[in-house]
Length: 284
Image 1: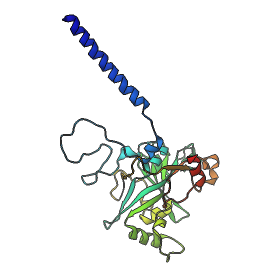
Image 2: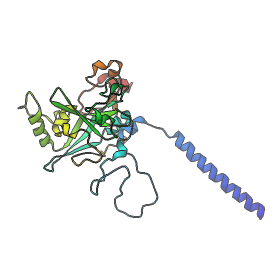
Image 3: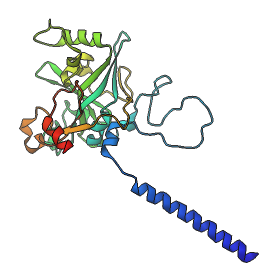
Image 4: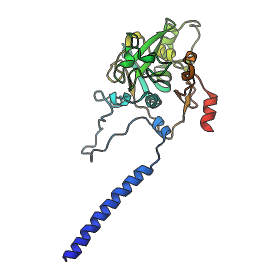
């Protein structure tokens, strides 16, 4: 009887080790797809045990009071610029105006700037100035700067000093008439022409006009601010592919001008600049 008991104990131990090993092998063999991460950027909630209620759950990856559970918190922004630039695609940028109106647009195009080593970054060489201070602040900090003395561009800091992501284009979702009015008021040139939907946010300065974003937003925290935030979008892993292409308007940056650090949703009519060569290379 003692011998039988010992045999049973050894059998159970062997079975447990075999099960553990199988789990490790399964995990190691599971494919890791970069495009999956880019198309389904919302992190999954860890399973901490069985649910004790049937109500909604608060994720550790989201912040904000009840009713705003889909707002992306600080953890989302705390990743390298390249992965953050891809993770932004499909998420929804929300701007709440002083009168309470909320404007929404889905991010369809971004650019990554890698910090001091990146000759196209405002932080190249590690230089810090009052203008670019937001690039060196915690991930999720806005860096808003002015170009041509009249237009604004909005970036979000990522992991790494001086690294950030530029938002280049949005797909307008909510408040399109208000966006149209704001763009017509703020843009120069043919202000009398009625803008088409695809023209509202198809560029970094255009989206800032459409959402009434100016220098006053510089150094705000996108995870905490009450007037602007990011919500988790509905993109699924089977969603449209992401194209990696060269960034726009940085011809002065030498070899850095050719690096594929711009990311956009293939086939989206709201993208500012389509790169057919990059799309063909991706399909090859």
